[in-house]
Length: 480
Image (cartoon, rainbow, N blue to C red):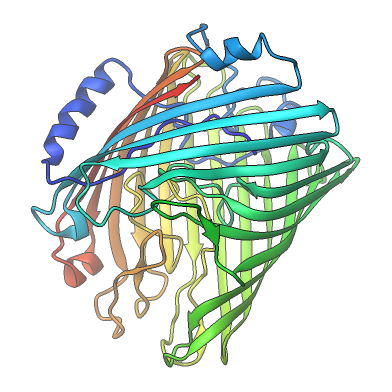
């Protein structure tokens, strides 16, 4: 699960967000950005995109990018080492600023995040390799407490062995601490925007025969610590099968899956300690209708128990995109509808709130990352254009509603932001408008900036102070 990510900085300091906003304007004026600007991603696999003429930027691949060489010390070192040993390094930094935190006027914070990663791969033979990666993630100017995911100093981020080949080979197995991403990352993803990222301890076995693919896995999410060696929670594990059927429908992939989650430390609706025994059954379909039209649809349902309570929840994601392939800048427009169920009758012993598992969040429900994948209805529209070969600009608009008025608004960590059990505060959470831009200076350096502003709806105005929330970031990433 290799990545070519950007940079991240998240921390807090009582410095006016306007200072960060000024930096942002300067950054945009020279094209500061990140190649991750691809709103409304349908995550069509590259092997599918390759089969459609002129599909180009449909799934976020960057063949349009001109990448002049830069300075990469580890790349130069690799040229003098045996071919079976390779090093990889990445430095990522991000300035972030918020105003209107907790939707309260005058609650402003800004801070800086830095993340350093150094990896080494040993591959003495084609069918066997070892990969290890250390991480040092730090936050500066943040008011206490200084905790993950912003702070995770000198930790083992990844360490795994690989037997066999990749996804295009008949057999492959990966065992150890690793990044994992399935489909569009709505259920399980590496969440790399966070300063510490996300990894899992476990094993994956992949099989492929002609157009059929299957990955069996057993994974436990690693809980990062601020200092020391991170580990997973004992007994918190997700087993599963994730399949893939290529070209069952032309130029698309159908991905059925089934997960089984076991976890301690939960609570029943009556307040009793309990264990989770949850099953998730779903399917994802993504592809290209033409070289200009991409789409994806994903549906999943959750059943099982939390102690003596039952689980009954569902999730739906629909995305459609249109790329003007013959126009300069290849502008792409997209629309998305997302639904994650909420609990309609709190206290009845039936959990109706969608369990978001371990998804990749950033820029899926808005740039400001204030809304989680639970009890939510969302309409999302946006666009992306290549201003130059290396400069990308994206804009988006989000409109959020509670799926159930009697359930709460949840953040990315499944915490309740606000709730009205009576349901009298309505369902309209609010809206967000966002703008992001990215610039690839060369093969090693990415620059980025973005801004998102949340305008509270009736629910937030009644259940919080009701101030607008603004998020601004400026980023720099260096792959050496």
